[in-house]
Length: 370
Image 1: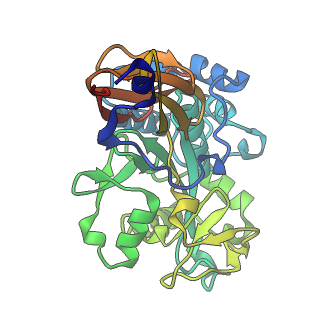
Image 2: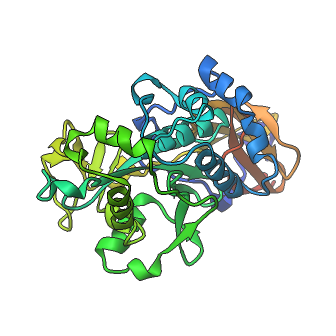
């Protein structure tokens, strides 16, 4: 075979290992915030958030540490500061002055603190199945606010409730809101463990209950005992009954076990997109997708690699070839082939220097034979 013919023969490319994630849904379905936005950076520095998670051995340990820390900033209650706080920085400053806040404020703080640390997080609204205009006005609380954080370790969203300071597991695996819902409505609640962390929730009393009565006219007869009974009712099923309705990023999950409703939380439900598509609610995050095409010429054979990502706060890609060192790469690069097995690993890195999930591919290559 002459040299000209040799250049026209590709040799043999064969993928022998393929571990490349396929993205579910569109990670751009919500706004995650910006870790480097001025107030977010101030939040991170003023409250030394890096120190909160510095001792943690794993990402999930960091989630739990951050949840515990948020819970420890104040006890559940009501405040005249509700209307003047705009973000986590405001809330934590007011809490440091002794003000108390409810579940939605806990969730906002946890989500924004996670953002400040470079962890994708989101707020989740949950409600009882029967959350229409109240048949019994004394029920008081028909909804709750929790958070979900993306776990690279588990490759899924996991639920964190910073107000009650719990998360949920089944067989040691952390659950998300829809998994809790499925267990509750499917009659399998006993399979789920509610993992209570420290400090536990504290029943509001005294001045904060007076503020509750002032803010909500229909609760004007409430006293400390009524609030205690309200919270006992709230926790009677480990709060799992509140996961009957799950809303994320303007979408609410519906199916034949819990149909849509036009009234919620004592008022019109507002504009909500009903969905039964998992991709609408539980999209992929922090993954990299690899595509490649073969090329060859007199300099040798190679793969033209293209990368795509679903990483909030994305900064750059890192690539490791044949088990070498991780190096920054552009989204498109040449991967020269050598005889035998070639391996490539790719991941995203965000602006807080947190790395995403690794995708990899091994390609066996044999050059043309004369």
